[in-house]
Length: 272
Ligand SMILES: NC(=O)c1ccc[n+]([C@@H]2O[C@H](COP(=O)([O-])OP(=O)(O)OC[C@H]3O[C@@H](n4cnc5c(N)ncnc54)[C@H](OP(=O)(O)O)[C@@H]3O)[C@@H](O)[C@H]2O)c1
Image 1 (cartoon, protein in one colour):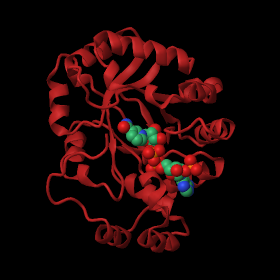
Image 2 (cartoon, rainbow, N blue to C red; image 1 turned 60 degrees about the vertical axis):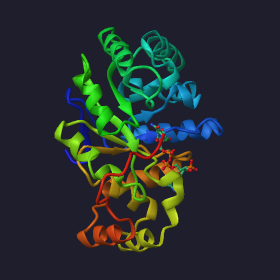
Image 3 (cartoon, protein in one colour; image 1 turned 120 degrees about the vertical axis):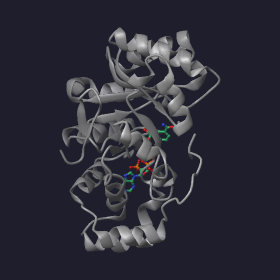
């Protein structure tokens, strides 16, 4: 189905989800925004123990937990075997739920991957997480993950991807696609910086849209790639949702490529 992401276990979600980093300052408005997004079908909600807002997310989804796909992350300093299991228990408590749909290692740290993955596999067997994945890992590290016991169960990778950060197109996106592993694009709006770009403004006017919607439609053009913009108001959520209706033309894509060139060689993964 168009604009749906299918995990290898068959679970399907809308390719446009919702980020939550920095949420917590305008709590009521942010909860309203998240709920509006869920009503519109943007049911993937991305949080992390590091964001300090899992209670807010838990409150936003309390009355609709069944239709939400909750993502949370263990911070690398906690990502040893015991630490991962304890961090997950704490996240479950804060979120007010008894399972997390996708639990990620936030980025690579000092603990060996083998410990994190062993804990992830156990948490999955215990039903505390439905699936697990990684974040901010480039191809070499993803290969290391997949080579571990249970490593093939890695369900997703969440990485920085937007018009101004296209490095992953060179190798990580094709590698993930070959393995039917969804990629979650974080910071798809360049933290909002792309909203007034001249080229996007021109393309937007042809689609009766906004530059933000063009930036999101561009990330969503690729199968297997989802976007998790963070929007702190109902109006931003509604604007972002309309990006799902935009189909960029070849001319649009040519203009975008001229302004934001695709990588022609390996570029180390940007982000954390
Ligand atoms: N795994 C990782 O290491 C990692 C790292 C960074 C981010 N993430 C995840 O990815 C999510 C998204 O990334 P991000 O928060 O860094 O940046 P982003 O989604 O690219 O940009 C967020 C900014 O865009 C603004 N915005 C959203 N919709 C808008 C609209 N329709 N019109 C104008 N401005 C709009 C927001 O403002 P308002 O709040 O005012 O709407 C906010 O300032 C995060 O929230 C987090 O869940 C993960």
